Length: 196
Picture 1 (cartoon, rainbow, N blue to C red):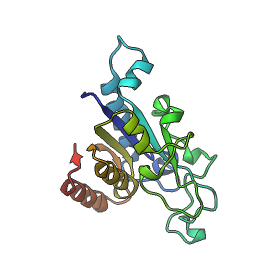
Picture 2: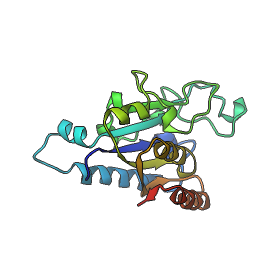
Picture 3: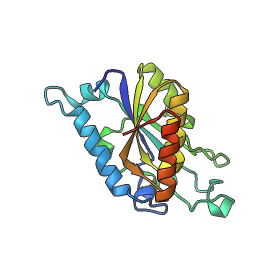
Picture 4: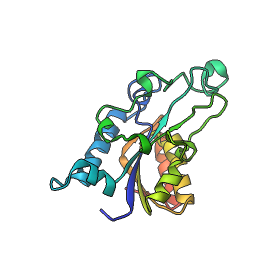
């Protein structure tokens, strides 16, 4: 693992795994993400805090109010999902041990704004994903999450625009539609995102 790298996990939340917007390959994607973290942090001589200092794990999470404009009943295209305070908005339990408040970024909190990219998310201190990656001197970002065609792609493209080398972990992705997933991967490759 090279120095100055980090993992960004996008929307590995229950509503996208087995809830109102359950995506294809979601359970396998969560397992692959956990396995990847394990391979990056399997250094028994160090304690967990030191490991996460050397390989930070950042979470991007949808966290909508109940009246969000992306929901069908309010004019949007999606069923209600990841509503604040519900089980559906929680990070999967396999990944929760790695979640730290300052490295967890919430998006979609404003009922009038649809936000796909993790770059629009903020942590509890009001800092953006880009702010924190810059503070960590990150050059290489590994990305996994849900869904390939939407929030994962938007986040990857913004990371690339910010000058980072983006590694997309293809086994740790879930998606709305298999053809859409494949097309998004091919288009991201064409944009210089490394699909692994």
